[in-house]
Image (tube, rainbow, N blue to C red):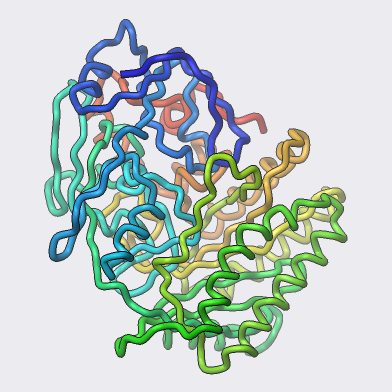
Length: 465
């Protein structure tokens, strides 16, 4: 087991960690040793995968950072599941399964989250097929080391399962996960165009959701233009043709390299120009494939490897699908315009991502625990300019206040600069139940990071806003 002191950042590079100890265990027994040895491995003990979070949930200052990268293995899939080590990344599992004509139900755009975090952090994507759009829905079982240093295993349906699938490493260190698998299935994508200001928008929105399985949207919040990409499994099988495969390959490159293009110039006029160009590109897709474009969505998750310097920053909130077109979007457009009037140098930079998420009630902190939701996620390319990113964090905090007031739910790994009050208002008694279960599982706060300590008890500062 390697031990050292190392600084590291979250995935976006914005938040730095300086742990007292940085350790890379290779076996469950070594994890037990770390948890049990408080002298050499001070609290909090925080497992670290790829750092694929835009919040401070994987920041470790003064405690012990536990790199899980050595838990890197994938077993041969059985009839309907596959076992993977916690350090394997999502895109790796998908590529492994694709060679066997299989896939996970959950197929996000970015594939760098590690399986340990996927099992307990409510990562989101657009619902399709068996996937609610919340990643923890595909988790069948986990093995972990608890706060007493004991090896444990829990399965879907066990008492407390909904707590473990929302645990964010606060109940124990997950080192192995069993995930659902399904046959590799062709997806048909189509595109629906509208504008939030159009009289027909509400009916277009509702009919799109009613008549399609997966729905992913992109919104230019300055102009109100919105494109909804519909995704439906093709029960008859088939393969993409040559032209479709070219477009499918371009998809990955566009998303990956659109980031540095968007961030090339910080001027607001440039951002508006790039947003219009991006929306025009989706319009071109619709013209190119009037009957739909065939793709294998499980081949889409992008690998933003460690050396790739351009990263996205996200800020996630999800709203009831019923109020999204009538109340949330009009109010948000007013909020954004007012914010930009009061902060004349600010621009939202990127397009807003909109995902339809179905009910997922097997994770207590799932944003769609009680009802279907639609997300409205600002995103922007990262920059090394601390002042610019500080202004972005201030906007994200203000947007969080808007979101809570409009029935929004967040996630803790993809929603930035949260406050204790915002979390309490968003989750209510579910947050209280989660806190109580966490205290029972870890009364000595062995796994309680500074970030979650702030959100639960308000006695540590984690943001700079």
